[in-house]
Image (cartoon, rainbow, N blue to C red):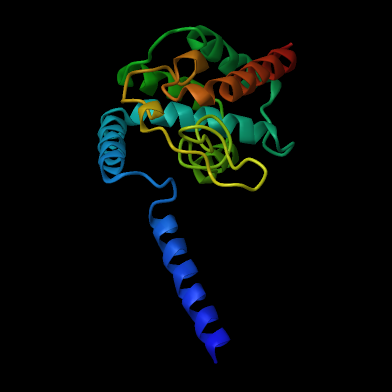
Length: 196
């Protein structure tokens, strides 16, 4: 009977710790939680005021998805129309919301309905999943060797700032830059070959 009681007590303790961990997976202090919440709210406000920039990021993310499927891959003519837009904006420091609307129209106007649908229904840019914005870990890496998750550094979660989604060097989340740069450079290289 004592063994059962001990097991039940241990199970309750494990479940309590697990529940607390699920609610606060990075074991943040209340002050750190408040800082992180404030930064998230600031980013939500920035995104609400810059919907076209987010849309360009989604389109870019979607172009990579189109290229991964032979049924929706861009044609030679589409590549010739989209490539100059990507190259023009590839090294600019920032993109204004008004510019982003024009850029997105220029990129999407040559696309078919099936391609547009695939972009619209694909994984969301910046909202999870690998790619040009999702899947980045804030504060440094995953679990090492199955051990505990590393401490989350709230200071590495950037404040909102203007950037250019077609220039990975300007992305606010620094840890996303190498992967985003590799992907956009590959996309431009692939479209350059196809446009010939």
